Image (cartoon, rainbow, N blue to C red; front, side, top):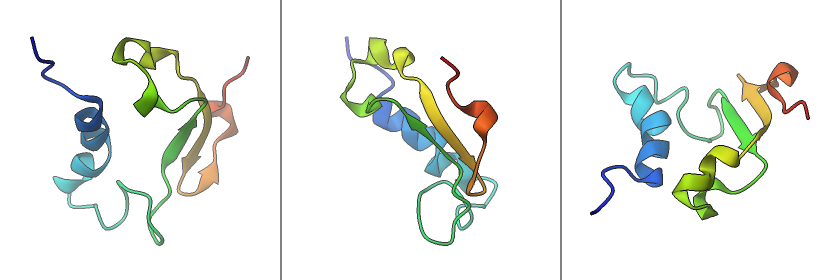
Length: 76
């Protein structure tokens, strides 16, 4: 049986596709000069993990509007 959802599809849904409907893709949704820099950095490359192991990735750093949000860093 083929998976209905893929990691690439999920990442697109949460990034680029998620900003198309409200029409804010010129401001956010991808990492480009001049955009808001809303992103998180994981402790591992989730594109190289088995889909049933992605949950183990920890967020190391979160940026909102290009500013570090230290309260979102991993605490352990």
